Image 1 (spheres, rainbow, N blue to C red):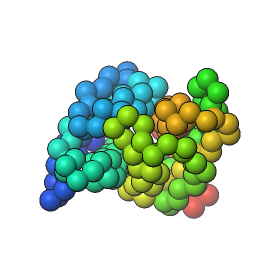
Image 2 (cartoon, rainbow, N blue to C red; image 1 turned 60 degrees about the vertical axis):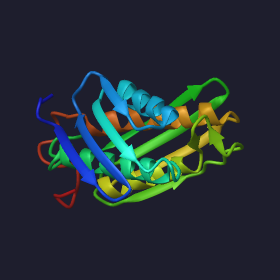
Image 3 (tube, rainbow, N blue to C red; image 1 turned 180 degrees about the vertical axis):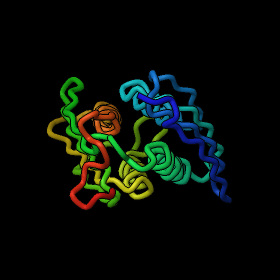
Length: 197
């Protein structure tokens, strides 16, 4: 493990002002303030279960709704992931996991291939969980997949409680990404027949 797989991203628009530092080889430490309490809780779980160190401050137009805050955070997180893993030499590239949470079971698979694609099968029964709109979960992961350039598949295998489903999604994504970004001594360049990712 190296100590330099980190990225600091600042992004400011008329809708959001975001400052983020992500360390891939961390210990799960998080300092997160987005103004959306449930989203903060999900990002804290992402950090802890993926062993990523994440510092995040978001000032968003929450007087409108949570859309720009959550989507733009996804854009910045995806950008930080892409920058932090650099040329991808020596990484496993693929990661997958299945996470249970009470009645819920969620599968996540990641390919850090450079090609953006999101496949999700979510079907939330509630419009909101606490102060976060459930429709924003897809927007968040879509933004990550496209700004990071990753294939991202998240499948709800079982579950009814929207809180449990969303939390299992964030945790499974964290664990799959942790695996995909791990260094493997057997990989001398990049894990691709094309020679590039």
